[in-house]
Length: 399
Image 1 (cartoon, rainbow, N blue to C red):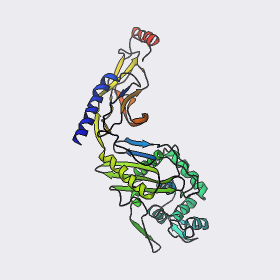
Image 2 (tube, rainbow, N blue to C red):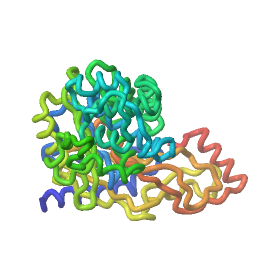
Image 3 (cartoon, helix red, strand yellow):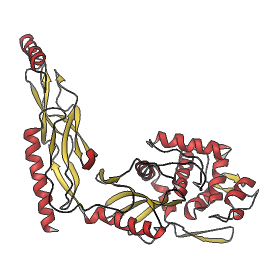
Image 4 (cartoon, rainbow, N blue to C red):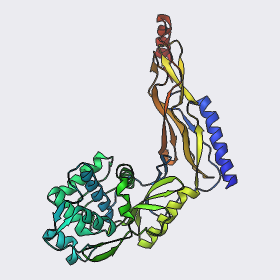
């Protein structure tokens, strides 16, 4: 580990020196030389996404935008829609919904699936339905909530898809509140991670439902059906899904030692394979990455060309401290890319945000972004200086 930390440290120091000198124009890219160690992040899952939320860094992605059937993971979106309705005052935890015959037959005792055994035509509070939905993965709870909020399961599915778009999901659509086999719901790993991040940021007070070990309703004792609860250290949210078409999947969030990750896996052949892969996936975030400081706040990152000013360039500096997770001894070639829209037009004010520094990982995936600002002011040049700038741009351009 000490040797690995030295390698990562030397890479980081090289990054600082090289970018300060080389990143002078918009879009110029600098390669970070890879080490000879093996790639430390891998998974047998065909679809994967792992993000450290504390460092706002993408750690790993594999077919993260490939659509798959979510199975019961659709119920995480069902819960999100209900949470949103509660937050807006549209409903309350005491609101009562009636169990329709459709909800009873499709998701209740006659279905022989996960159920809270709600009786047809009975009335159940939103609080109890949420417990049944999240803790016991109950299909009848999902259907009763869907019909109660939107009048029909189809209307609720449309609401799920629209709400997903609203919170940043770009490749997912929902056809039911349950995700039962036979519907046409599709999600992506990247979108599920976005959903997880949304729940953590907007509804942290509801998170404990995902890890509550059991609940008793109507004198029926039922345990939490999460496949990961008690198996992954620091787990405190979300669950698993399964479909005949796309196999076993999972969405988790884990917090350890002040760091939090969101992880998604999909396409695994068995529940055992899913659990093994998810354990390894969670552990790698702590075992194989370390936070490295690239720039202190105010440190020079590069320069931007300036048109029509008393100076032809202005330094660009880090708006805030820039620290990113780097692999310990990993062979992945990371790059730094300074991006701004230029040339800047004088006058230029100091402290103006004009672009960002991107850390680019394998397959040209941006794993981290940090804003950069102008480190000085550039006054408007004289008529002669501006004329010279114009001739220079005409003859040589700004690249």
